[in-house]
Length: 133
Image (tube, rainbow, N blue to C red):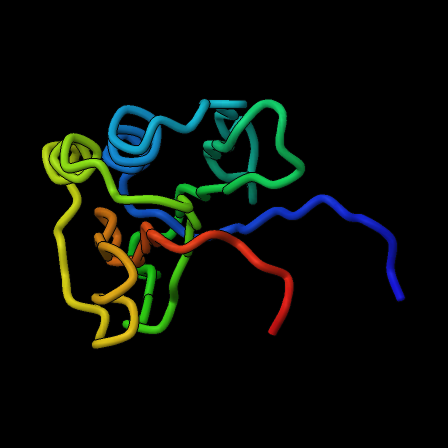
């Protein structure tokens, strides 16, 4: 058994500016760090999340343009809102480069799914988080 931990989800990103528009300006997450590569083998990074949370997203700018993100329709980041998804939030996300998509009957019933600029899917769930299976 492990104790409480911090979580980092790292993903490749083709356009960090587009990702920042989507996650920071559209979704409303905080830009925690911006790191510019300054040597061989390093990458530009955006680290986003909530300042008071023990999780964040690390978006990695790829130095090799032949390597592209390859998300599938099952690569989901699910945020449990515990209530209705605000139409203004959905509009901000689409205005910030996202695209509303169907995620199938279950998630379509319980929220809204939006693809980010790299094709990764963000589910805004109307359900409340429960640690029970």
